[in-house]
Amino acid sequence: MSTERIIPAPGHTIVRDTRTGKVSYWQGEYHQSAADSTGVSTADYIHAMYYFLMQRQCRDVLMIGCGGGTLATMLARSGVDTIVVDLHAFSFDIARRYFHLPPTVSCQTADGVAWLKGHRHRFDAIVLDAFGEGGMPPVFMQPAFFRLARSRLVTRGGLFLMNVIVDNDEDPAPDNLVRALRKEWRNVRLLDTDGWIDRNAVIAAGAVADLQKPVVLMPPHPGGQKLARELDILDWRRIR
Image (tube, rainbow, N blue to C red; front, side, top):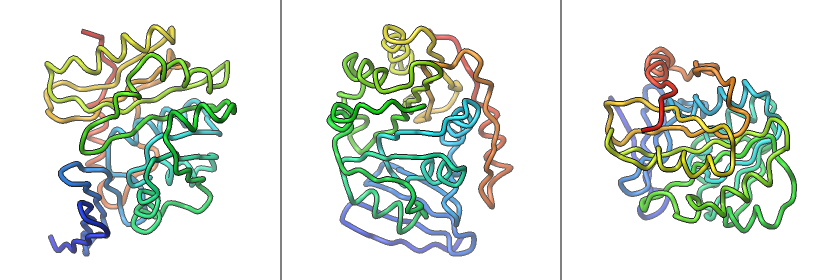
């Protein structure tokens, strides 16, 4: 495979496949995003969250954490009003320059908690996907944040989605987070698959009782068939 490497800033690397146009974004050793040449994600958990948002017919979405902005790109192309909040303006530069983040996506450079406290608008959905080399900031895993997020969702039909990195099958983090979220929401579900290390799982809270197992709605090119197989492995599982 022929690739080119771009260093937009120290510690940040863009890797592009010059044959297919696929782009990956690395922050140090942490893989932030991957997409096809048009900005459609190649990550199974991104497509799972996109499917849930489409199933719930969300039209007004807040995202905390940008990365390559692939989910925001996919939502914007589907006519969803999307706001992305990230502490670093540089993330938006990466997303727009290398991942085709549309200008219709509102990019807010701010701390996610502070931004939520300063805005009373209620969203159809809030998506938390805020990771860096140090993992997810602890503030986003506290009861106070969950209460704040719930207060910024519409009363009926609101959806909270959270990306979680799972070290291995013995990692208690996703199950513990589900238990914490259940103190704020009646219905909380975990989309995960055993047998893989350093994997992404999705926690869904709120209007989730009838959410179906996700399938690919916006396939990347190339890679759509491979993504469909990967997404098929993900399923709802019981909390341990």
